[in-house]
Length: 89
Image 1 (spheres, rainbow, N blue to C red):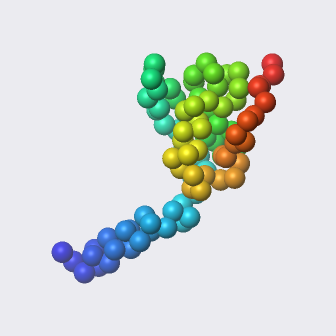
Image 2 (tube, helix red, strand yellow):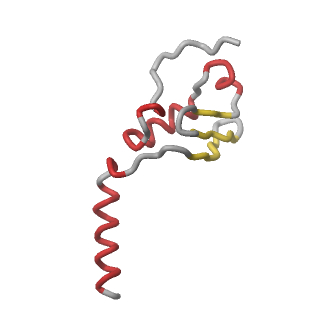
């Protein structure tokens, strides 16, 4: 193996341990829930999920799970309060 590649592999291992180096600002994913799969996204300012609960509350188990998974790798705007008020229409 080339020595330059070995150095990059070692650096990647170190970076993987230093999660504060990464900050997700926008992404989309498919979340496989217990009853169906849902499209979940974050656009830099707002979460979105295609589940029914999210439509009423503006958050759901899928967005909250992703917040826990990604933790400090999310921007402060991506971290919601634990007990939000329901969305009014």
